Length: 429
Image (cartoon, rainbow, N blue to C red; front, side, top):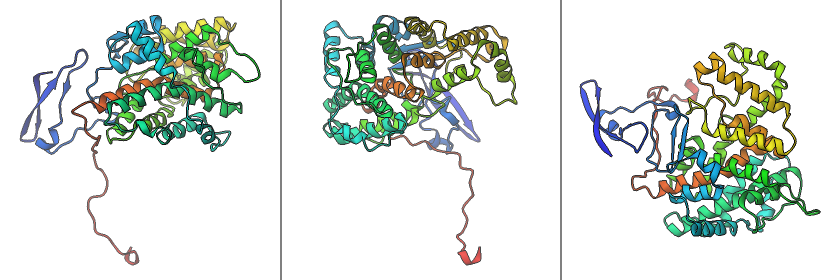
């Protein structure tokens, strides 16, 4: 919706640019015709002030610590719903009725198996390969196994591809984990819910019965909900940019996984856990706090602050509660890492240095502790993030494909290299 404008003056040129208003959030200046009318580009490294698309999926108010999926607060979805309900919401725009949820759960559950030939595909990786490297290669290869759902112009094929990605990602993630630790693959079981099924595929072995702890299954489901989507972050923007070229959805998701692997994005919870382990005990915290405040010291507190949130990350509050539930259930209530985390949190919420810089604990601060307690190695942390974020990537990709204004992504640049010069033969250089 446009009802106002902004004037841009460049030399003797004055250009009127329309201003668009969203449902909530900042206004957006439409600069689509800027280059045409002025011959100039905008310069915005990291795109921190640029809206690259129009979306109805997720809204973040970083200053006030708000995260909404299709208008629903993340706190309510995590507390009262389950992951597949959130998946339905992100994909279709509304929470499902009981009948719709039953049908959706059934369709996802009966897509969880992967093509049997994929077992052989895994054997092509080295045993010590990082699970994220395996995920990038395996998910990218899905288009070779499921080429009947790669026509992005067909709404039915797009729907099938979306269901397949959500359903098969836990199976692929569990296979990557089992391959990494040298254990046989465990097939999915259709009478189990999404998160219980995933934990069983990760931790069961063929030689004995394995029953998933319901407290851990609920915690896993909540972790998936908290990571399901987060607006136009680096990996989601990567999926959209790849998708803008018309690439098939499996290739686009593989691109998103590759981006997520970066330590500044999906690897942050692993870094936060490593930091807590480095600090070790509560009595060492003052030393590390002092180091964090020292501009000349390379040490940085991981798990604090966020690119968008300048308030307490709402997901972190839910994750804190989940962490306590898991540690209590497993008898790790006195875990020294949690004690260090709690003391660091207390300092961050009261110390003027942290308050002034708005360095609040984020979701990565707690999720690493929880996943470690559940039995996952740090190499699997980002894999679990990718599993959960797949639905967000798919929803954003589908929205982009159906957007009549969608064009292939083509950012421009500020060129600072050499001006035109003539070629000189090698004998005269």
